[in-house]
Structures are given as structure tokens and as C-alpha cells.
Picture 1 (cartoon, rainbow, N blue to C red):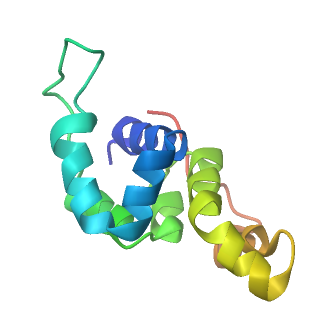
Picture 2: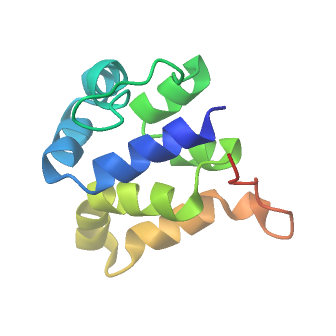
Length: 121
């Protein structure tokens, strides 16, 4: 897993309202667009050809599978905050405040008592 590249995706998408909206509405196309034209950008001029997503990473991002991303070692906070941006409001309407955070905790709860996957790159 390219933890750096997955974490870069999580960080960039969470902090850009347009990216977040596009990712929530059409994850398959947005992940492809990000991987081709947004992710490789180092700055306004330079591009990197070193990084790419694995098939498993791409699948997890397209399916919004935050548990798989967690298990692959995606940074916990980046993973959580991105999906709060997508799911917090619908969960809150049905289950009250912090509902998505509790859902996230429940779905990764099988890691309780174990060492969490490392987030180092």
C-alpha cells in the first residue's frame, strides 16, 4: 500500500469542498480523475510519476470502505474526518450527534485490544 498516496487523497479531498462533493456524488470517476490529474501534482508546475494507487486502495476509495482503508494503514484521523464530511449529516438526522463517529468506531471495533495498523509511510 502506498500509505502516502492514500493519505494524500484523504487529506486533499477532505479539505476541498468541491473535491468532497464530487467524491461523494461519483466516487469512481472522481478517484480516477484524482489519480490521473490531481494526485500527481507536487505543486503548480511539477508532477510526480512515482506514486499510484493499488487495485485494493482504488477499490476501497471508490466504495467508501473506510474499514478497509483503516486496515491497510490509512491515517486514522484523515480517514475519519473525510468520511465525517460525507456521512455525518445523514447519520446525525437518524441517530443524533456523533452518530457517524460511533458507527466508525463500531466498524473498526474488531481492532480493540490489538495494535492498530501502522500509519508510517
